[in-house]
Image (tube, rainbow over all chains, first blue to last red; front, side, top):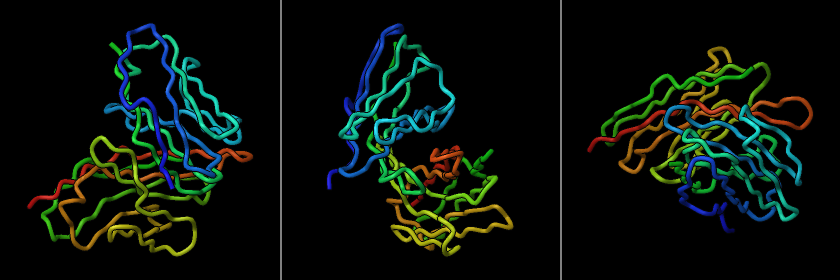
Length: 113
Length: 116
């Protein structure tokens, strides 16, 4: 079974721009979660989608948004990029998002200059 | 509210010696607990999980963890370290919120170094 894939793997953007990251979960998984990982703040939960609905959201500003499609693929968007948005963005999928283990993708490394 | 404290940010062991990575948690309800490992430039990989079954949980690559409710701890151990174990390890607590929402909280991570 193919694992979680994230595209692109690396991205360089300028302050003020917007960016869209993509995540394809493991086949059959309906829950997709997004995390931001930085050296200073560690791993922080962004949001979770299940069956195209946002089920839970972390403590991030409204510039961070996401969506999930009917095939469970998910995108997250960051508008008006700030230098502090530079991070590794990780996507994880699980069957139902309950106490299931999450399977992580390799991440997208976003650098904002 | 739940929280996770990994008591050591760095642990260094010699190859072939035991590994102990410490994790304490705080949770209002019966939590699910996980340990994940992250190798450089890679995503996180699940090592093991606890979901209120046996308190001693065995995971992959010889790792295991013991859930101790009285101590609110979930320490990760391995009898004999291997060079390939060098990585960052995260203790994670998962707790149900209202309805079907779930909150995952990650510890700050423990960097494990294995010396030859």
